[in-house]
Length: 457
Image (cartoon, rainbow, N blue to C red; front, side):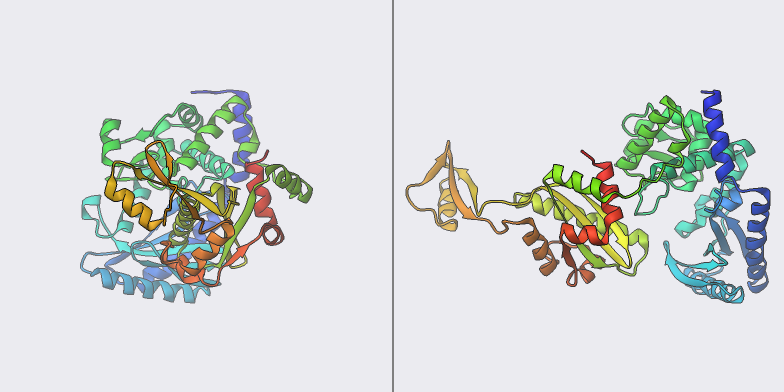
């Protein structure tokens, strides 16, 4: 384990900023206790109420707490009864405490999310189970997570979890939601359990290669687990469910960010890794960057679909990937893309290295010895004498479908089905706008600044 005054000074400073005070913790428990008490009075005796999430595990950050309340139904209820009764009880309590607003959210089945006195709370119906073999729905395991963490994580390690959470926040990879594809709170807790401390985790992470694998309870062979959970960037087996990878949401990009951030912090410990200084947007700097790049920045702006974020963001990423692949098929070259959300709009922004092409393009035909294929090629492309050859292949000249990449984007808008645009994006694409760089600067200046900062010349 690495120790040292520099590290400890940083950790003490960070914990002083992110660890809730005893008064704040008391206030949180009084708040959630009131919700639990009302649900207990309202629900039948065969439905118990349990608090889960970071509040229950003692790993919450100041100003960022998970208020998760589970209505634990007995197996005598059908799944449909669990959903309808669970939402009914949740709505009644939310109404009684005069919530600011509430909405139906979705995991495997619907649950209620509400905002009460500025605090966000999820009330989730699930089945009461003793172990994972009794699981009926995916959310049934969540209370087991709380019990497991509380059984193995000591008081000092809860602060280590807080350090890890804030470190990942500073790096921009905290959260398993589709938008971030990073590290969940439960994954943070498991990583501290498996490494004992935050600094030991950083030491380990700085040396990770390939697919990091952690199996806390059974310590099985990593190669076996890589074969079992095919394709993830990282594997952390759920101690309460050996068939689940808690790190499934972590993208290779997010994993790379953690590895690099760990190396940098160990080399030069600083509070800035936890709380990166905000940079002031500079129009002058943006213009200088754009002039140096000589690329084309454009984007597709749509009205934000009213769906769950974890469904929306993967569709946006998929849409961006499809555009990139189609652009490449037509001879353009995509440098990178990024996605912004602002004022009820979603912008999928693209930066192209090659964005203008000549009217003509070379079409490479089959080798000459495939006689029937050559004849078909001549007929299809209206090839006339003298025939053009390159070594043993027949060639033709054809007119491009798109000379400008903006034409491709407009075609996607007009023929979204043919391009395989994801369903909820497709519903909005007909009214989409293809934005010029000038409009992006006007509407999304801060987003453009942050994009260029990460990819600056």
